[in-house]
Length: 411
View 1 (cartoon, rainbow, N blue to C red):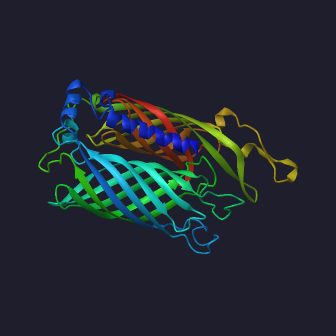
View 2 (tube, rainbow, N blue to C red):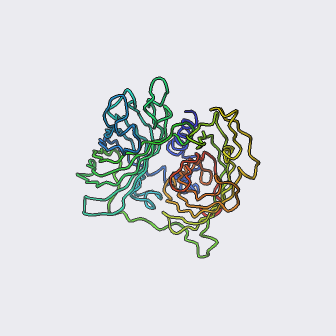
């Protein structure tokens, strides 16, 4: 699926630029020449990890409950992760600001124990994590998120795979969030154990798109190379703390687009509308900087969805199974909303969530509450790549949000 490939490629390009091209001026490397030389002088530490993730598949479809060729539930999964990460030196500026943050690239091989109908997908992803609490001198509670693309699914086909009404694409997005205990055996070796939630979806770019959701355990071992961060190092305050309200506000402007498929409920059943539809959007998001980790604010969200309110312009041709669609007027496919936003701000990446309501709209498809989950990857200190996903009414998948943004004001 080209859309998912493009989204993940954008994130990887941003990550590699930050990792290998410090002169690009990204938020990780510099806001001035002094910070650039500081980061280059204090080399980061590196680590390699191996993890095992046994899990349970939520039975969200009859396919998972046993309505398949194997005549048995698809309720278990197993993943093997290989990961590379780096952490900024505790002597560097970013190491002092974010002393426990790490980020990297990983690959995971998965099995759902039904290769003929589900496949054994492999995912490639970027990830980031940090400490939540220190429980003992060598024991901490940490979190981590993963985002990437998974390849090798056996997708639905009316001829060769008719029971799999869950997976519509051979390539799907992969999202994972985990909490775990990190036991530092010595300065070089760590053992981890915890739980995680994973989601696989194609972002409504193809049908079916019910998504695959899992919950499970994670057990791993990590080996650190290079400089080891000092536990005695204390995090520094956010640089140049402003004394005025205006000095604590940043402004993110985002332009995004995507394509999506559309299904509608028509009389006695569902219908898949032929073709793909364009989605274009613009967000203006002022955010108050609470501290170096968190921002919160409002966002003005405008979106045009070429597939919106098609049902109201659909007719059954000669009482047959054929449907004919007429393009709705622009005012029924364009909406403007307001959303509350919160953002976790870390080196390279920021995670943004939002809950909003369209206030200028017309038609059932746009007169909705909507929710947004997005990842921003900073290419420079102000330019960022945006990969997001929008839901409506907390359950209905809408569309991907792939775009470019620019941050004004507070960095």
